[in-house]
Image 1 (cartoon, rainbow, N blue to C red):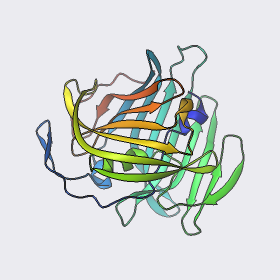
Image 2 (image 1 turned 30 degrees about the horizontal axis):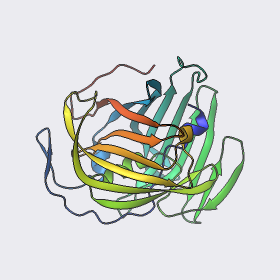
Image 3 (image 1 turned 90 degrees about the vertical axis):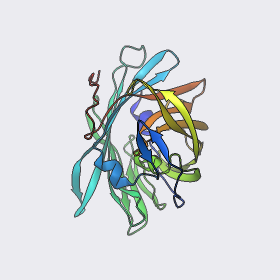
Image 4 (image 1 turned 180 degrees about the vertical axis):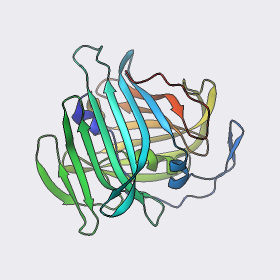
Length: 279
């Protein structure tokens, strides 16, 4: 996985619709009556590990977690962290380790809003290789890309260049609505359209063992070229629980699809832990 490619997988929300009450759903004895809030998601103290595969090949692994709050521009921000590591056993890939950070806050609409996103290329020792800084007072987003170019773009409301979509998508999963997300990628603005279905599907994941009830979200990219040639249609699955745990994503490529699947999960309120360590 190249640093530029992996950095493009994370997208952001542009528009949203009011969340209506849902019929009661049950997963492992837990009643689910409504969509989760950002505060509820953050309070879970979660840690995720995903496997990225293409056919029979494992391309790499992804870790996601929330780090302790940080002070940025005089205000307290939440800190979303993602680490991606390639499978260096595959020929022509080699060892890649990229780490992504987003500092964000929750606005008056209850949505997470990014203030700064950056990527550290750990294996090449290039810190802040990519940076997108959001100045909402002037309506501009300032960027620095891997090729060392800098510049600014007009800022779209609720937009980001980072991975806050990991939180945003959970707010709407299973809600039976459509949303549109803007994302700043490679010095330009693109979009992602989501259809958050409320249809239930039973699926099995290594992180939980037994089959669990899920919600399926589908969508398409607009003016975006993502990792490994990802563009066009995609689908994702979320647990039908109080936190809408992100379980799986399937993205179209030039040939076939890449699959990102949850293999380990824990939260501070659960004894369930399956540590195997990153490779």
